[in-house]
Amino acid sequence: QVQLVESGGGLVQAGGSLRLSCASSGLTFSNYRMGWFRQAPGKEREFVGGISRSGGSTYFSDSVKGRFTISRDNARDMVYLQMNNLKPEDTAVYYCAADFRGTTAVLNPREVDYWGQGTQVTVSS
Image (cartoon, rainbow, N blue to C red; front, side):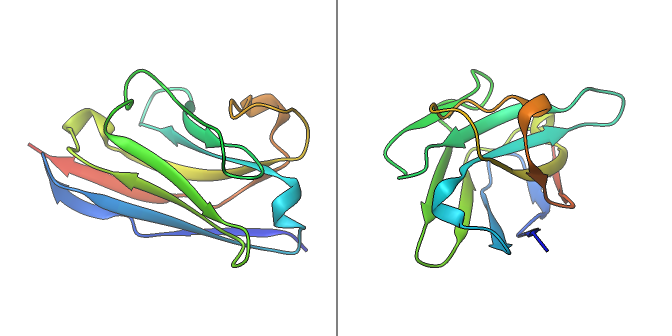
């Protein structure tokens, strides 16, 4: 059974940092592109950023570019989202995602094979 388990969310003041982790099990991790999405109340799920299978390529949405980074450890089956200079508009539930198809670091939510349960990130002003 495939599981993606996020951790690291919480409450932080604007300008602060958080590091989200996603632990995977039940899949051959290095075969999957990995990504992070977020969903704020009343809004659609938004792609935040993704990373290629090898970790050599990443992609970020314009809203987080320059503030967030993604990394992965294929030996530990882990993917991370480092979030710096957080803003109140970053408040959302953050989801880890795994996609077996495709070749780029851009993930389409309709093509994601597995989702984590989400972790809440709240940024106070």
